[in-house]
Image (cartoon, rainbow, N blue to C red):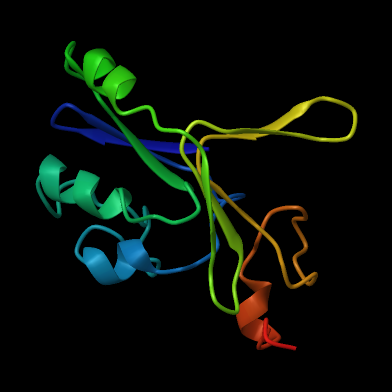
Length: 140
C-alpha cells in the first residue's frame, strides 16, 4: 500500500487490488499518470476533484481519508451495505461494508474489491485485469 498526501487529504493506492479500469487516469490525467514517478501527483487538482475521481474506482485500489477532524463523522455516515455488481465481460465488483475471508478464516480484503470471473487472474480470487487480455466473454 502506498500513501500520498497534501492539503488535508491522504490518498492510498493498493496495487494488489487494482484491475486497471483506468477510471483514475481518464478522470484526472494531471493527477494519475502511470508514466510519471510518483504516478500520483497530489498537486494536479483540488482535494475535492481527487476524491470525486477516487470514488469511481471500481476495485477499491484507490481510497482516501480526509485529515480534518470531521472526517471520522463523515466516514461513519458513509458506511453502506455490501453490494455486488457483475461487470459485463469483467469481474464482480464488491462495494460497501464487506469483508472477504479465505478458507482458513483469515481476512483477505475489506471494503471495495474486484473478484475474478474469467479464471485467468494471477491474484485469485481477486481480479488483475486478465479478462481484458484473454477477451473474456461472459455469454459463453
